Amino acid sequence: MRTSDFRWLASAMVLAGCSGGQGDRETAAANTPSAPQAPGLAIECALAGAQSFSRDCTVEQSASASGTILTVRHPDGGFRRLQVTRDGRGVATADGALPAQVSVAGDRQIEIQVGDHRYRLPATIETP
Image (tube, rainbow, N blue to C red; front, side, top):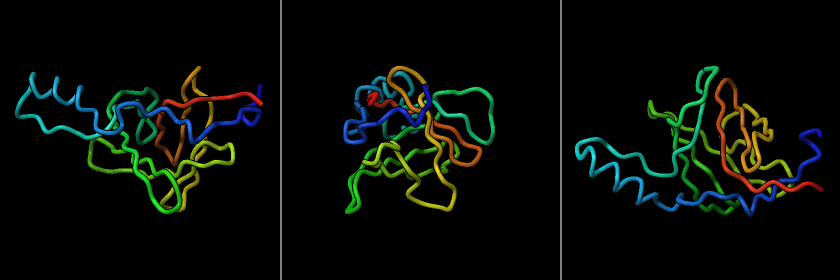
């Protein structure tokens, strides 16, 4: 089945824990009290053309006048903003000139590629 045969319910994006991720941060803080804590939900990413994914990025969800914005933060301080769409694509870039390429990466996950960075996000995927 082609990726274009899937319809993503953008409004049903599952980003549980995105509202703060307190449980994970509190556990990490108890183990390493001096380590800075990244906000948001930890996600897998493969940055700068890396072949393998690692859980080094985080994602935060916020509302804007144009809809839901996901901010993916890189461990080096860089970030990418993605706009949740309602047209079946899942997400699109909210900043910059590079387009987001979205594909299904599992039962409840999508993979987004922007330039040479790739991200895996939890999502609800429906077939038409």
